[in-house]
Image (cartoon, rainbow, N blue to C red; front, side, top):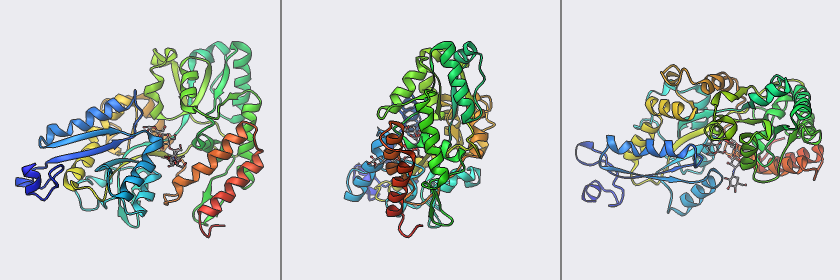
Length: 410
Ligand SMILES: C[C@H]1O[C@H](O[C@H]2[C@H](O)[C@@H](O)[C@@H](O[C@H]3[C@H](O)[C@@H](O)[C@@H](O[C@H]4[C@H](O)[C@@H](O)[C@@H](O)O[C@@H]4CO)O[C@@H]3CO)O[C@@H]2CO)[C@H](O)[C@H](O)[C@@H]1N[C@H]1C[C@@H](CO)[C@H](O)[C@@H](O)[C@@H]1O
């Protein structure tokens, strides 16, 4: 505490500028990674920072993904309770930056070897020509399938939505299992079908809402038909748990998911033998094939009382060595190009599959409103899948909500 006060800290978490620049004080980090599969790796990594900086205590806090965005905004707004560093999902970052809640990182110790970052990962950290975060993981989606069930049914993994229906029918006839579990309570699972029909949520260049155009309506019809035809099953709530349980227990032959689900999936009885998990590109629609780009950055709270230690912690957690550790332990994708050919990463089959997928994943516009596009969409998406509204009405209501959100967009 003396050191902290001496360098102007608040006793609790000095600003790290102790004698001969030695870092000190506390760094509180809000991690949003999945409890029970990812969190233990991130917690161990974070606490490893103290080995390098003995006078810094890392206070690891796991905040559920669904709560963290609002929790951080409320804390930052009220000026109390915000962490020093937050794991900021790619779409939260421009919003937090726009609100002034993030410390600009250009010229600080947080940013090292910037040229090593994948351009598409770095894109979501830039706002108003400044850098407000450091990319930690990047991801996209693919088909996860159960090789044993596919063999039993004598089918190949589907490359298109049409094939998905015929393959699911054969699986049902031969094994009694449902082909796919399609998550119905998270609109991220709608995006690859939307891209497959040549659609998108918006067109940022022409500032046009496009979710309710013909392609959007078609895509909603496609997902509704997957459920109505019995090719896929879904639920209005508890989608993550139900999707993972039905796939891990072998009740369904396929799901659509991303690298963040791999560690949890390997915990399932069907995948004790990891080789039974197959991964393939998301199915193409009638005009195109495309998967969304997601991921997470680390950002420093503008009001942190320990900026120096927070910058150093952020750099440490996004360093090549840390990213290699996370890729090896959890099959998550690095955001640094140099990490992909490191031992333990280069031979990881999941990372090897998703790298080319991520290189052509469809980016969303990194504007403050991007994160807010999912709430209205998921309401309508769930209603369409559960027969409470029609595809046309669903995308129509979504488009209306977007035009209220995006001032002046067509
Ligand atoms: C609705 C939400 O819409 C958007 O989120 C999009 C997101 O932008 C998309 O990119 C995509 O995220 C991927 C993600 O990229 C992918 O990595 C993975 O993340 C894993 C981690 O990997 C895993 O480690 C662990 O953390 O777990 C993570 C999650 O599994 O999967 C994600 C997809 O799940 O999809 C998101 C949509 O879910 C908004 O951004 C808000 O989040 C918004 N929620 C707020 C809305 C507020 C108003 O209602 C409500 O009041 C508030 O309480 C809610 O918070």
